Image (cartoon, rainbow, N blue to C red):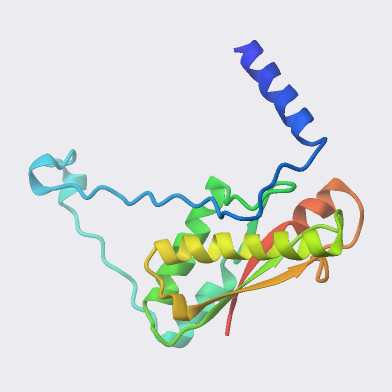
Length: 177
């Protein structure tokens, strides 16, 4: 186990020495859920499996206000545009919200930290926005409802040259129009 951890640490250290990011493909996996049929319900016969969950109905203004108050930022690793698994629920929640009303429009704004050249950062910002756009599209959101916008390092969330500041600036923000 220690060898595996050491090997992973060395790999991360060595990968930080150079950029191997290919800006041609957006790595998003389509992993649809498997519906559980009536005959194979693991909760069959238990009180948990027999209870119904009642949805909360919000009017359009309340729903919009609720979504604006939720997390609308997806953070990325250094020199990467792969959506991290911990941000998949954020994307799913916003995709469900946008999909519920065909008149809703959303812009995904891709950002980078200040390291790297202007052209590279603009391209990486676009790829981050495209990664989130594609993930929402895989959730069923219409392409006509989503726009990917790149900002690169032009609009930092946090000023500074610390790693903490860099982490906050490597992001894609979900913005409603």
